[in-house]
Image (cartoon, rainbow, N blue to C red; front, side):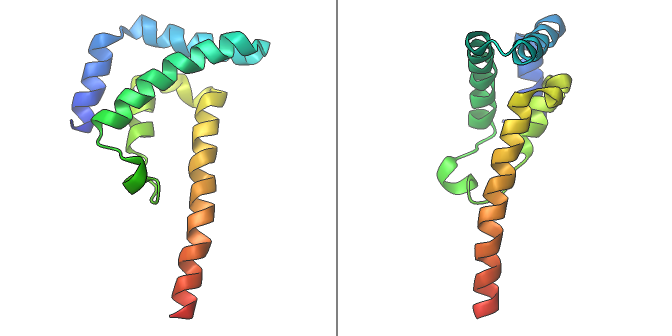
Length: 113
């Protein structure tokens, strides 16, 4: 599926109000530090994110070695305020850590060549 097809499918499946409420619920759960509520909200957003990963053709074996922002861009387009959540920050942190780990190895190989 293309970027726009995934976005349109999600928007058709989840009304604007539901999408806003989900992000609002995540933010409230994170703010209250209610671990059970946070876990439940994260489970919901992770299910949607899994769908985005699947439909965008993202494969862990192939794509974990390079940074591919397409799935997160889709999530932000469908859930604009998601960027304010800890969930988003954790996803971003995982990507940054992966880049930090991969990049030094890449540079070492270039220096040896």
